[in-house]
Length: 244
Image: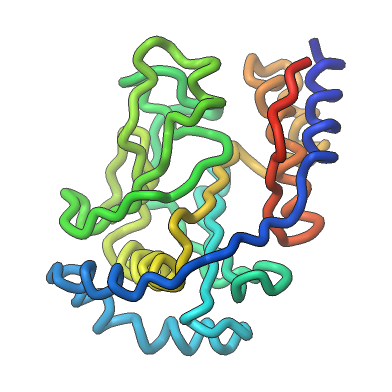
């Protein structure tokens, strides 16, 4: 079983190439979001400083592309950006997770309190969230559904506040900033924002310490995607699904 997992991880790496999407700007999305008071307030607080941050990193706001990465151990959410189709992502912001729930390991069923682990996309914007502002993930994905219970749950968000039963809270102040960045990326044409969630840095040393975990094989399946970004600061894209 371990050999199969290692072979699957190695094969996945050979199928990963840098993403180079063709993006169509959607400035109307920004206008639609700014109809909501909390979004207008967030823009008033952060638009100028975030545009300065982007330009300092060689990114024109109208060409912004984002990537978000989270680690359960270390309790952090990283926000990376680049100019569309223009090389490596650079780290823009790191936010501390203000609350956690569950344990290390993937989410498998509704009500388990687990934060998912794996490769997702932010594809929903909630400008009137119960937790100030929130960004929704596409959990469960097809990969999740291969392993989850009949009711895998859903509605996993990055949001404000410091409470959670499976989501990723980063406080109201931080979600305002991240929400503006996400709206700017969507207005620039990025219809979904990739988000990778890991239990910890998937180094050989960290995995060796947890080789006896019931999740060890699952974590090994994430290594290729994790390592590809670590090595290149570009996103992996699996061209096809390979079953061993």
